[in-house]
Length: 193
Image 1 (cartoon, rainbow, N blue to C red):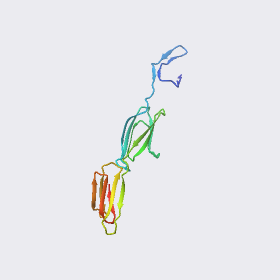
Image 2: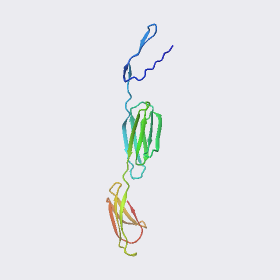
Image 3: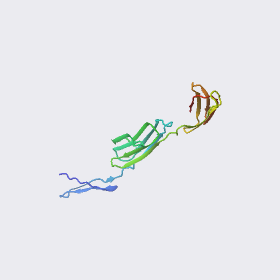
Image 4: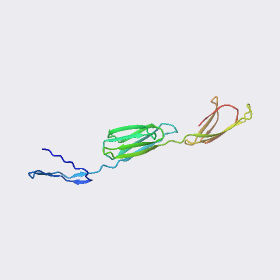
């Protein structure tokens, strides 16, 4: 007959099992060593920020080490949208690309339900904004109007291009955050930064 015994709640260490039957026949096992699984941790984290405000060309790659397979994990956005949902896998290299600037939450658990969470911040430059000061023309046909532009945000230096409504370049400022255009007539103009 077979007999089964379970030893529970053992601590880390070395154990020996010695078994003897009714006839005093015995067997002993080699030493059994109980070890603890390695702590779940980040082995590698590469983040590429989005190149411009509002662009979805950011990415990250994270490699998790430790724990006991199989693993389960999710990656979600700050709004709670689940972008990756893996159950019972041995894969610990997690990548996500073509993403917007956000704080992404990685929730990772192993076979023993040991939980690891990591916030992955994918950034981007701030939005490009302008302060505009317009001086209207004094009369309809006078060319005495002006527009003053100050650019901030994004990543400097800036190139500022100023066009009329026929797409003719009237003025430009390269590697600057400031442009003033005077002697303007009433009309529509286009600024490209």
